[in-house]
Length: 252
Image (cartoon, rainbow, N blue to C red; front, side):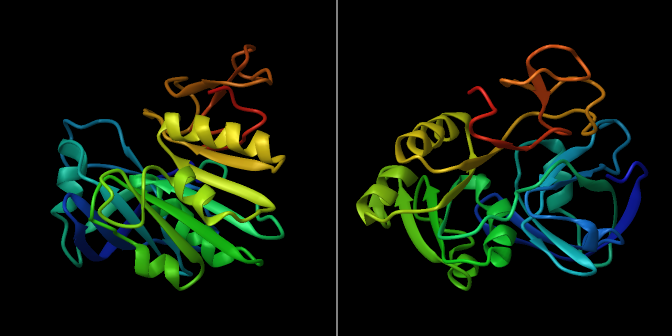
């Protein structure tokens, strides 16, 4: 984990779906990052003291791609950045996904999809991605299709299976050796139960509000079966101990 801020340079920043942007950032520490980790981005506006954690969608030797949703003043500021603009960040941060063997199932809901793309690129075995969306704005599908079989689920039935990602997986009727998921807590809770039913190991990337991004403030704790060495209770810090956890370890 990098403890000092660094400065990256924006190479591209474009809207790929309504309110969702993909930013390519030339970053000195890009090559150190692993699937499932994140960067904490600092706003130029000094009134916004806390950095914004953004997952890494694609990792290359000298740059990372981050796909993010505009959800407030900070991400709105990022969406206005142009090619050549500078951006301060801290990272890579957190623990990423372990690389498993066999047929992998990746499940992502909405903005939980981006951190799964780099994982799909690096997994050695067959990969199936179940991508869940609210409606017809199916961002990143072409990117995932380069590395995996893609199943689509939409809440409104506008594409793929009507319902959620597990509805699409059950409709496909296949077996898998390892499961990876990222998305809102209700989805991850359902994935955890599904993995237990199937007897398959699963790794979950939690979405949680973060403040410091380094585990010092205890603002992003989640319940686990293990005792945290820092707080001496059965909690883990999502930013430092996660965001990726074994489904057996985390309590949802």
